[in-house]
Image 1 (cartoon, rainbow, N blue to C red):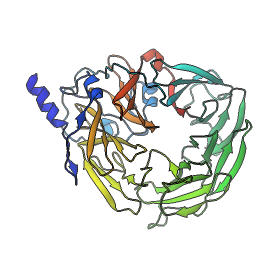
Image 2: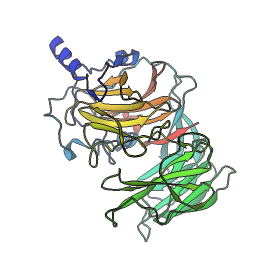
Image 3: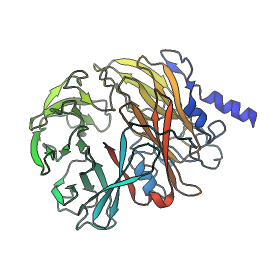
Image 4: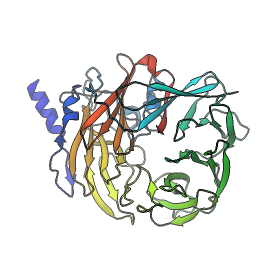
Amino acid sequence: MRGAEEAAARDLRVPVTPVPSRGSRRGVLAALAVCGVLAASIGIAVAAGESRQGGPNPSVAALLPSGSVPPASAAPSAAPSAAPLPQRLPNLAGIPLDGGPAMGFVRREVDDLIVLRWRADGHGLARTARLRDAFNDIAADARYGASLSNDGNLALVRTLDEPASSGDALVRLASRREVLWQRHVSSVADALWSTTANVAVIPVDAATWLVLDATTGHPNAHRIDIRGIAPPGPPPGLESVLRPLAFSADGRWIYGEAAANVDPRNRTLFRAPANGGRAKRIKTLPTRGAARAVSDRFDPTTGRTVDPTGFPNGTISSLVVRNPDGSRSWEARFPVIVDTAWLADGRLIVMHSDRFDGPRYVSLVAIRSEGTVTEGLLEAGPVTGAGIIGVRDGFVLAGYSIDEPAPEFLLVMIEPDDDRADSLHLTADELEGLRLGGWVN
């Protein structure tokens, strides 16, 4: 066993170019992960795409973010699979993270939406609100997604099986008292809440976004005209999606992109006033001042982005970071890239593994702005799925799931600078019907 452990440990040393790796600092968090990265193998691919694992437990899958690695059956294997070992979640001696952000969860209860939250303060899920009639006249088995407002007292509920005459989805704004607003939409892009106020932008169709301002209780709607915004050609008929990216720090602007479906790098950036008006193209996302864009999808210090990774439109192992003008800033290589997110100081959080089919580990690392690996945050495996759920206020939230011997899920909140983490373990019964709702205060 000692030889197997040493061989697996060597596999964790991944090259980073153009700056040679200085070695990952294996901190307290890595030592706390007692589930066997050193001699582990994962029998099922990590972090599926839009449908997640698509396996026997959709509740577990619903908690994983839209990652970049597909189910093993849908993607090429980076290496021959090994016989899987028993699955185990990381076993962390949690340290409460006072002052950390809270993640919201939702669960349907007849016609209402129940809101819960977890703050990584040493306690479990806390039930905080009941949003009335969110599912009134909606079939009990209808698929849905829900996105919580900044304070967790409102939710945009999108029913994915609503049989509207046009085939559109139904979006509702639910509150503690009643449904405040609803509309059918044809856009496939997700709505986006401001991180500082109860204001949301909702993509409606190819010509219109709506901004719902519910800061005073009753929502006021402002129309954004997005006509004429498209990715740069050719070809002129390129299929694309217009999606919101971020609100500005002062809440006055909404930033978006028109990205080609085949190659999301082929995109046009634009912005529009949050109180309504015409969208206009911009060259780069602002990173300074009150108008700076707030999101973990790009480097908030420079506006740099990561090329798409994973299946089906990205690369498997090459992590390419680009400057706002499209030139390469730096590149890192891993056997398989699972997910990425940016910290506010310009560090890039990367989750990677050794292969699609039967990976022996899932590792979470932070890469400095100049492209050097500075620290290993957490190593885990074998698991069924994994992904970076989000980054906020300097904290990183990751999720890990297993299907055997029974469905289980583990949320891990990490504070990279202080090398601390807390976790939330959810059993099969606790997972029933539970979905992520987004960051809440």
